[in-house]
Length: 225
Ligand SMILES: N[C@@H](CCC(=O)N[C@@H](CS)C(=O)NCC(=O)O)C(=O)O
View (cartoon, rainbow, N blue to C red):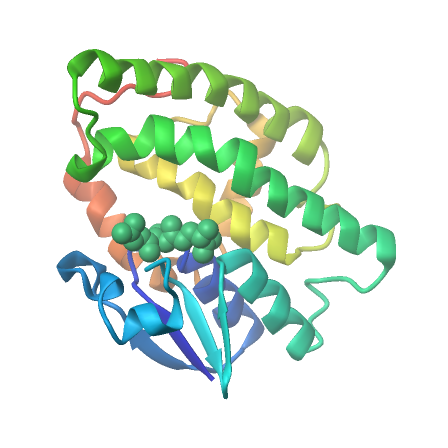
């Protein structure tokens, strides 16, 4: 099995974290998105969308981080993706919520336009409007994540860790790029503390952490700033 990924990629690292924690072995193939390898042949034959991660399991090719995690969990009979109908539906629900509502505003509207020059909008008004829109929505999503999704639970779907936690924690950690303080969200901060304490966390996030350190101190707009 081959996994095509890049160590800085927010969509790749949930898969890397799950594999590392669950002991799932694969042959790593780094796709250098910094020089555009993902937009060229042969990678676009694997994924015409030009996006990582991609899993190659024999002649079966699978894109989309969430789908890859579910496939790997089923393939390895992992307890992190429960088979019980309702428990599994809850994991799917959390992953979809994170991947749509939350990720869109958190990363694409608030974080990436500030952290990545390629996400700069064509006018200052459009740029600051995107960030303000992201900030406003993210403040609501973070409160829901803290109060309603995590609440008193240890993890996103109860007291057992699931693939939803690996998925969501890496996406929440994207906030490190803009120095997002999560201390006003006690349940979210506690859960992120548990995820950051996983034995594989630092190895999987090494490049991301280095990038976040290089941006430290810049005057970023953050939720509740
Ligand atoms: N929905 C996809 C998103 C994948 C994605 O956004 N990958 C990024 C890296 S984090 C990428 O390949 N970006 C290349 C580009 O945008 O040109 C997934 O979850 O796998």
